[in-house]
Image 1: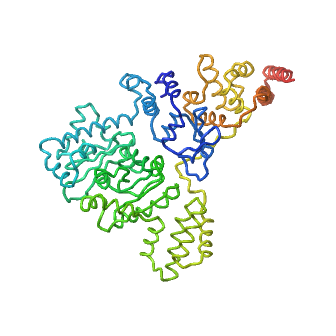
Image 2: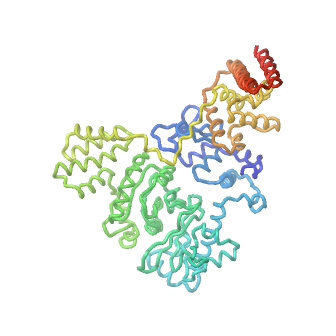
Image 3: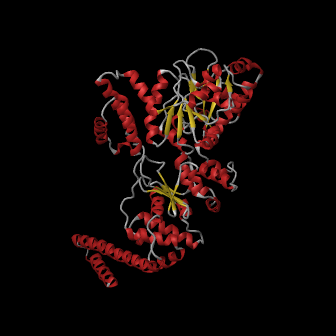
Length: 588
């Protein structure tokens, strides 16, 4: 899709960006010589192999091979289409893009962009319903729940009426096709044919992504009927496990306070937020996922979990602990009474009561140990064994050996078991741990073997534009044996003839293949060649490629000569033999 947006605009955007600033908005980067490094956000790792070059404006992971420029990072990290990434970075840099309603751009508009538009229209419909004169019962319900008018406006709360086709008719008036309504999860198909509104007779709570775009909806009844909540299904723009409710509002406070409070439900977020507790997000009723944790890591490594005090809340907390710790988060837990959640506590006891519970949050160790002592008999050897085994599963997640040692010591003292035996069990556990922790959805994208001479020559050509002309006088793109290197060389040659820049971050805009982008980035992070050795190195690379070219040609002719002999084709045989002799002379 890159060709639909003028090349000069793409170059202008990249020229105004600092990729270090862009990426550090998502993950923490540390200076490493001339570059920056971090743990890769695209696969699980304990040793940082993700490198960012401020000089070249590119990134490359030596673990999984993920590579690219600022556009590619945003597309990969935020799961965006190319036009969306361009639009966001254009706004960031103040570059004016062509209007999206122009014919050629409209045809290329991504499905995601269309779904954002439909969701925004649905939001306006639901909001207008709540503000209408016949919705006093819904408004009274919200006010009786302690939700103030300004909060209703800030969260864009709405109402789905009783009509079976209210939203359908509204969206049809905006020329939205039913197929897109269904894709957005706003309507359901009837068995007898036709469609009806998914949400009816419910308070509507819109869900926004981190950029403030509407991606889905939660819908709550105003009485005690079940189910209490109905949520949007997963769509191309909404996957519950990849989003955190309220993060678009809370992210600045989380970063400023360097801490996040995680609750479960919509109202568990809305009530504390309304009362001034701003560094808070909701996991939307589920145990945390790896992707949600990675979202939070952009802003803080300090977490306080405040899940409901029921069995489900306890289980969700326990499931989330190991994942948070493995991702390097510092975790505390504020346990609540069995019949309470943050919404109820704020309404019945006030925000100060919740604040005290958060300030007195337990360490992961004390919380989990307390839960396990409630499950097993700590007075019996078998009970101690069960508790120790489950505690070690979490302790083993710590990458820091000092922390592991301290927790083992605490566990030994609490259970009155020798550290020696606990360490012995931990070592047994370690032998069972393999690299299978790597997410199965992440495919290691190692480049298949490429001639290092060809890679080095590409590095020279990118770093010194003047070398391209010299090299192309000696070699053709087809002289490069690997199809990927040949394509990169061809593109560079064409760009030079057009007077274009050969900066690596700009060069990537001309490739759709990940392999080509990865190769460009990989060459840029290869060790530098000293200035006084570069000319000799370039000449050596050219000579080796020529030798390889002749060798390949001779091998090809040898096969063809054998084939002509077998077929008894004297005329073709004589021609091939003459060509073979000429090639040998040229090589000499």
